[in-house]
Length: 283
Image 1 (spheres, rainbow, N blue to C red):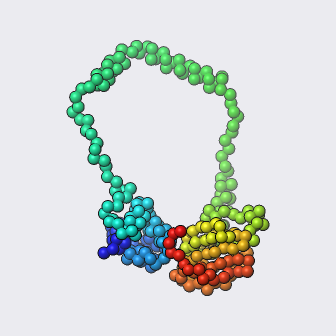
Image 2: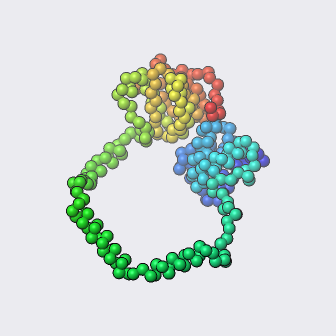
Image 3: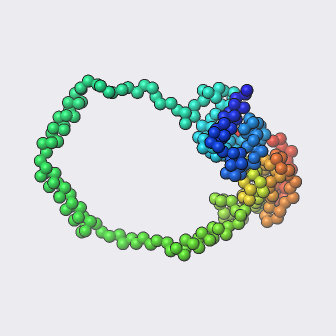
Protein backbone atom coordinates (compact mmCIF):
# COMPACT_ATOMS: atom_id res chain seq x y z
CA UNK A 1 0.00 0.00 0.00
CA UNK A 2 1.47 3.40 -1.01
CA UNK A 3 1.62 6.30 1.42
CA UNK A 4 -0.84 8.27 -0.72
CA UNK A 5 -3.40 5.45 -0.59
CA UNK A 6 -2.87 5.15 3.18
CA UNK A 7 -3.41 8.91 3.54
CA UNK A 8 -6.62 8.68 1.48
CA UNK A 9 -7.94 5.83 3.63
CA UNK A 10 -7.29 7.92 6.76
CA UNK A 11 -9.50 10.68 5.36
CA UNK A 12 -12.25 8.21 4.47
CA UNK A 13 -12.18 6.53 7.91
CA UNK A 14 -12.36 9.92 9.63
CA UNK A 15 -15.39 10.87 7.51
CA UNK A 16 -17.19 7.57 8.16
CA UNK A 17 -16.42 7.75 11.88
CA UNK A 18 -18.17 11.12 12.07
CA UNK A 19 -21.15 9.85 10.07
CA UNK A 20 -20.52 12.33 7.24
CA UNK A 21 -21.43 11.26 3.69
CA UNK A 22 -19.84 12.18 0.38
CA UNK A 23 -23.00 14.07 -0.46
CA UNK A 24 -22.71 16.07 2.80
CA UNK A 25 -19.20 17.23 1.80
CA UNK A 26 -20.44 18.02 -1.73
CA UNK A 27 -23.26 20.20 -0.36
CA UNK A 28 -20.84 22.06 1.94
CA UNK A 29 -17.89 22.54 -0.45
CA UNK A 30 -19.64 22.34 -3.89
CA UNK A 31 -16.83 20.02 -5.03
CA UNK A 32 -18.07 17.48 -7.59
CA UNK A 33 -18.71 14.11 -5.92
CA UNK A 34 -16.60 12.23 -8.47
CA UNK A 35 -13.52 14.24 -7.37
CA UNK A 36 -14.28 13.52 -3.70
CA UNK A 37 -14.50 9.80 -4.49
CA UNK A 38 -11.18 9.89 -6.36
CA UNK A 39 -9.53 11.62 -3.38
CA UNK A 40 -10.67 8.81 -1.08
CA UNK A 41 -9.24 6.26 -3.56
CA UNK A 42 -5.85 7.98 -3.48
CA UNK A 43 -6.04 9.16 -7.12
CA UNK A 44 -4.47 12.57 -6.49
CA UNK A 45 -3.08 12.92 -10.02
CA UNK A 46 -6.45 13.61 -11.68
CA UNK A 47 -5.76 17.38 -11.64
CA UNK A 48 -2.85 19.79 -11.12
CA UNK A 49 -1.41 19.68 -7.60
CA UNK A 50 -2.32 23.29 -6.81
CA UNK A 51 -6.03 22.52 -7.33
CA UNK A 52 -5.82 19.18 -5.53
CA UNK A 53 -4.40 20.95 -2.46
CA UNK A 54 -7.35 23.35 -2.50
CA UNK A 55 -9.80 20.41 -2.66
CA UNK A 56 -8.03 18.57 0.19
CA UNK A 57 -8.19 21.71 2.36
CA UNK A 58 -11.96 22.01 1.84
CA UNK A 59 -12.42 18.25 2.42
CA UNK A 60 -10.45 18.43 5.70
CA UNK A 61 -12.44 21.43 6.89
CA UNK A 62 -15.73 19.66 6.07
CA UNK A 63 -14.81 16.70 8.32
CA UNK A 64 -13.55 18.92 11.16
CA UNK A 65 -9.84 18.12 10.74
CA UNK A 66 -6.90 20.44 11.31
CA UNK A 67 -6.44 21.77 7.75
CA UNK A 68 -2.72 22.65 8.05
CA UNK A 69 -2.02 19.30 9.69
CA UNK A 70 -3.78 17.41 6.89
CA UNK A 71 -1.78 19.31 4.24
CA UNK A 72 1.47 18.37 6.05
CA UNK A 73 0.46 14.70 5.98
CA UNK A 74 -0.43 15.00 2.30
CA UNK A 75 3.00 16.48 1.54
CA UNK A 76 4.66 13.70 3.55
CA UNK A 77 2.64 11.09 1.62
CA UNK A 78 3.66 12.67 -1.72
CA UNK A 79 7.33 12.37 -0.74
CA UNK A 80 6.87 8.77 0.45
CA UNK A 81 7.54 9.48 4.13
CA UNK A 82 6.14 7.32 6.93
CA UNK A 83 2.84 8.92 7.97
CA UNK A 84 3.14 7.49 11.49
CA UNK A 85 6.12 9.77 12.07
CA UNK A 86 4.28 12.87 10.85
CA UNK A 87 2.91 14.81 13.83
CA UNK A 88 0.11 17.34 13.26
CA UNK A 89 -0.88 20.19 15.57
CA UNK A 90 -3.70 18.03 16.94
CA UNK A 91 -1.25 15.23 17.81
CA UNK A 92 1.46 17.23 19.60
CA UNK A 93 2.51 15.43 22.75
CA UNK A 94 2.79 16.95 26.23
CA UNK A 95 6.46 17.41 27.25
CA UNK A 96 7.61 14.63 29.59
CA UNK A 97 10.32 16.61 31.40
CA UNK A 98 7.94 18.44 33.75
CA UNK A 99 9.44 18.36 37.26
CA UNK A 100 7.03 17.63 40.13
CA UNK A 101 7.15 20.05 43.02
CA UNK A 102 4.98 18.04 45.43
CA UNK A 103 6.36 17.20 48.88
CA UNK A 104 9.30 19.61 48.49
CA UNK A 105 11.37 20.64 51.47
CA UNK A 106 10.81 24.08 53.03
CA UNK A 107 13.06 26.70 51.47
CA UNK A 108 14.04 30.30 52.12
CA UNK A 109 11.32 31.32 49.67
CA UNK A 110 8.64 29.64 51.81
CA UNK A 111 9.95 31.40 54.91
CA UNK A 112 9.85 34.78 53.13
CA UNK A 113 6.25 34.19 52.07
CA UNK A 114 5.20 33.39 55.62
CA UNK A 115 7.02 36.49 56.89
CA UNK A 116 5.19 38.68 54.34
CA UNK A 117 1.85 37.23 55.41
CA UNK A 118 2.57 38.12 59.04
CA UNK A 119 3.62 41.67 58.05
CA UNK A 120 0.40 42.15 56.01
CA UNK A 121 -1.73 41.21 59.03
CA UNK A 122 -0.03 43.96 61.07
CA UNK A 123 -1.26 46.74 58.75
CA UNK A 124 -3.63 49.20 60.44
CA UNK A 125 -7.10 48.83 58.84
CA UNK A 126 -7.75 52.58 59.39
CA UNK A 127 -4.87 53.42 57.07
CA UNK A 128 -6.37 51.23 54.30
CA UNK A 129 -9.85 52.77 54.70
CA UNK A 130 -8.39 56.29 54.65
CA UNK A 131 -6.47 55.57 51.45
CA UNK A 132 -9.60 54.25 49.69
CA UNK A 133 -11.60 57.36 50.68
CA UNK A 134 -8.82 59.60 49.37
CA UNK A 135 -8.80 57.84 45.97
CA UNK A 136 -12.59 58.19 45.67
CA UNK A 137 -12.49 61.93 46.44
CA UNK A 138 -9.68 62.60 43.93
CA UNK A 139 -11.49 60.61 41.24
CA UNK A 140 -14.75 62.48 41.76
CA UNK A 141 -12.95 65.85 41.62
CA UNK A 142 -11.25 64.93 38.33
CA UNK A 143 -14.35 63.69 36.50
CA UNK A 144 -16.63 66.52 37.67
CA UNK A 145 -14.32 69.54 37.42
CA UNK A 146 -11.00 68.94 35.66
CA UNK A 147 -11.91 66.57 32.80
CA UNK A 148 -13.43 68.57 29.88
CA UNK A 149 -16.32 67.22 27.89
CA UNK A 150 -15.51 66.42 24.27
CA UNK A 151 -19.13 66.91 23.24
CA UNK A 152 -19.09 63.72 21.14
CA UNK A 153 -22.55 62.31 20.46
CA UNK A 154 -22.95 58.71 19.31
CA UNK A 155 -25.82 58.33 16.85
CA UNK A 156 -27.17 54.83 16.24
CA UNK A 157 -28.13 53.96 12.64
CA UNK A 158 -31.82 54.02 11.84
CA UNK A 159 -33.62 50.70 11.36
CA UNK A 160 -34.86 51.91 7.95
CA UNK A 161 -31.26 52.51 6.76
CA UNK A 162 -30.18 49.02 7.87
CA UNK A 163 -33.12 47.38 6.05
CA UNK A 164 -32.42 49.44 2.91
CA UNK A 165 -28.76 48.36 2.91
CA UNK A 166 -29.71 44.68 3.31
CA UNK A 167 -32.18 45.02 0.43
CA UNK A 168 -29.43 46.39 -1.81
CA UNK A 169 -27.12 43.49 -0.91
CA UNK A 170 -29.90 40.95 -1.51
CA UNK A 171 -30.61 42.30 -5.00
CA UNK A 172 -27.00 41.74 -6.09
CA UNK A 173 -26.76 39.59 -9.24
CA UNK A 174 -26.26 35.87 -8.64
CA UNK A 175 -23.10 36.03 -10.78
CA UNK A 176 -21.43 38.72 -8.61
CA UNK A 177 -18.45 37.28 -6.73
CA UNK A 178 -18.48 38.10 -3.02
CA UNK A 179 -15.53 40.33 -2.15
CA UNK A 180 -14.59 41.03 -5.78
CA UNK A 181 -13.24 44.59 -6.11
CA UNK A 182 -15.16 46.94 -8.36
CA UNK A 183 -13.40 48.29 -11.43
CA UNK A 184 -12.49 51.95 -11.01
CA UNK A 185 -12.86 54.41 -13.94
CA UNK A 186 -9.11 55.02 -14.19
CA UNK A 187 -8.49 51.25 -14.33
CA UNK A 188 -10.88 50.91 -17.28
CA UNK A 189 -9.08 53.63 -19.19
CA UNK A 190 -5.62 52.06 -18.67
CA UNK A 191 -6.68 48.43 -19.30
CA UNK A 192 -8.17 47.73 -22.72
CA UNK A 193 -9.32 44.19 -21.82
CA UNK A 194 -12.13 43.43 -19.37
CA UNK A 195 -12.80 39.68 -19.23
CA UNK A 196 -15.69 38.37 -17.13
CA UNK A 197 -15.69 34.63 -16.30
CA UNK A 198 -19.00 33.03 -15.32
CA UNK A 199 -18.82 29.61 -13.63
CA UNK A 200 -21.50 27.06 -14.46
CA UNK A 201 -19.69 24.33 -12.51
CA UNK A 202 -16.72 24.12 -10.11
CA UNK A 203 -13.69 25.30 -12.11
CA UNK A 204 -10.08 26.05 -11.19
CA UNK A 205 -7.83 28.61 -12.91
CA UNK A 206 -4.22 29.72 -13.21
CA UNK A 207 -3.97 33.26 -14.67
CA UNK A 208 -1.09 35.31 -16.07
CA UNK A 209 -1.91 38.94 -16.99
CA UNK A 210 0.29 40.82 -19.50
CA UNK A 211 3.09 38.27 -18.89
CA UNK A 212 3.71 39.77 -15.43
CA UNK A 213 0.95 39.31 -12.86
CA UNK A 214 -0.02 35.74 -11.84
CA UNK A 215 -2.97 34.43 -9.84
CA UNK A 216 -4.69 31.13 -8.98
CA UNK A 217 -8.27 30.65 -7.81
CA UNK A 218 -11.35 28.40 -7.91
CA UNK A 219 -14.85 29.50 -8.97
CA UNK A 220 -17.95 27.66 -7.81
CA UNK A 221 -21.29 27.38 -9.67
CA UNK A 222 -23.14 30.67 -10.28
CA UNK A 223 -20.09 32.75 -9.29
CA UNK A 224 -18.05 35.06 -11.52
CA UNK A 225 -14.78 36.99 -11.61
CA UNK A 226 -13.66 39.91 -13.79
CA UNK A 227 -10.06 40.18 -15.02
CA UNK A 228 -8.50 43.29 -16.58
CA UNK A 229 -5.37 43.60 -18.70
CA UNK A 230 -3.66 45.94 -21.15
CA UNK A 231 -2.95 43.46 -23.94
CA UNK A 232 -3.17 39.75 -23.03
CA UNK A 233 -4.49 37.23 -20.49
CA UNK A 234 -3.10 33.67 -20.43
CA UNK A 235 -5.45 31.18 -18.74
CA UNK A 236 -4.99 27.56 -17.63
CA UNK A 237 -8.46 26.07 -17.05
CA UNK A 238 -9.49 22.93 -15.19
CA UNK A 239 -12.96 21.54 -16.02
CA UNK A 240 -13.18 23.65 -19.18
CA UNK A 241 -16.81 22.71 -19.82
CA UNK A 242 -18.11 24.63 -16.82
CA UNK A 243 -17.48 28.27 -17.81
CA UNK A 244 -18.34 31.06 -20.23
CA UNK A 245 -16.24 34.10 -21.21
CA UNK A 246 -17.51 37.66 -21.80
CA UNK A 247 -14.88 40.03 -23.24
CA UNK A 248 -15.71 43.76 -23.07
CA UNK A 249 -19.42 42.92 -22.89
CA UNK A 250 -19.39 40.37 -25.76
CA UNK A 251 -19.72 36.61 -25.16
CA UNK A 252 -16.84 34.56 -26.65
CA UNK A 253 -17.18 31.20 -28.38
CA UNK A 254 -15.50 28.49 -26.31
CA UNK A 255 -15.79 24.72 -26.89
CA UNK A 256 -14.38 23.46 -23.57
CA UNK A 257 -15.52 20.06 -22.32
CA UNK A 258 -16.41 19.00 -18.80
CA UNK A 259 -13.39 17.70 -16.87
CA UNK A 260 -10.98 18.90 -19.59
CA UNK A 261 -7.88 21.00 -18.86
CA UNK A 262 -7.26 23.72 -21.49
CA UNK A 263 -4.84 26.58 -22.13
CA UNK A 264 -6.29 29.71 -23.80
CA UNK A 265 -5.12 33.24 -24.55
CA UNK A 266 -7.43 36.24 -24.59
CA UNK A 267 -6.40 39.49 -26.31
CA UNK A 268 -8.05 42.35 -28.17
CA UNK A 269 -8.88 40.02 -31.11
CA UNK A 270 -10.70 37.50 -28.93
CA UNK A 271 -9.97 34.00 -27.61
CA UNK A 272 -7.19 31.77 -28.97
CA UNK A 273 -6.27 28.19 -28.07
CA UNK A 274 -2.71 27.87 -26.80
CA UNK A 275 -0.43 24.94 -27.61
CA UNK A 276 1.52 25.44 -24.38
CA UNK A 277 2.00 22.19 -22.46
CA UNK A 278 -0.02 22.01 -19.25
CA UNK A 279 2.17 22.08 -16.13
CA UNK A 280 0.53 20.30 -13.19
CA UNK A 281 3.16 21.32 -10.63
CA UNK A 282 3.51 24.49 -8.57
CA UNK A 283 5.95 26.97 -10.00
